[in-house]
Image 1 (spheres, one colour):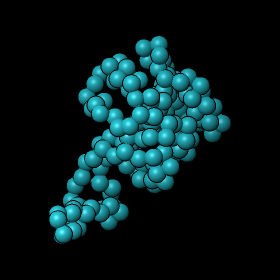
Image 2 (cartoon, rainbow, N blue to C red):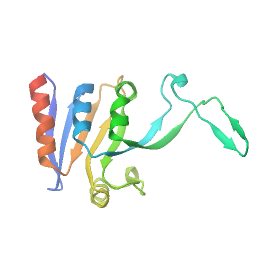
Image 3 (tube, one colour):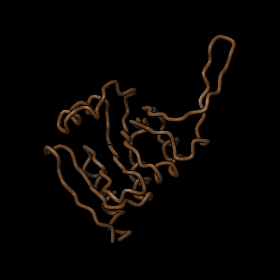
Length: 159
């Protein structure tokens, strides 16, 4: 049985917290999300050979070896879903939204201010999933209670 709790945040937002969230639940939730995805504080994968960088300077292209990297990524939902092996290992903080780009640092805002600001970007899903080794809780938040209902039904079906 998958342990989870459901709650309401400020009467307008709905949340699931899932212990040791299976990647299938994350992918199901992501499939329900909007088409634009912002992944915040993406870190270099544990396999550094899975990511490369190219720096263009005039007529010269340099391909340095990455030692560390933290970046915010803008992806389409299909690309986010294709990277499931990375999310399963290192977790992610992802926002699914219609308007792009998100021009504010939402991770610097308190919970209420964060969700009110995200309302301006047509968001419908937030996923905060820790890395696969931590055994912590994944949080999924949405302003759409039906979306949360669908994810909850999947969790109950897997239980």
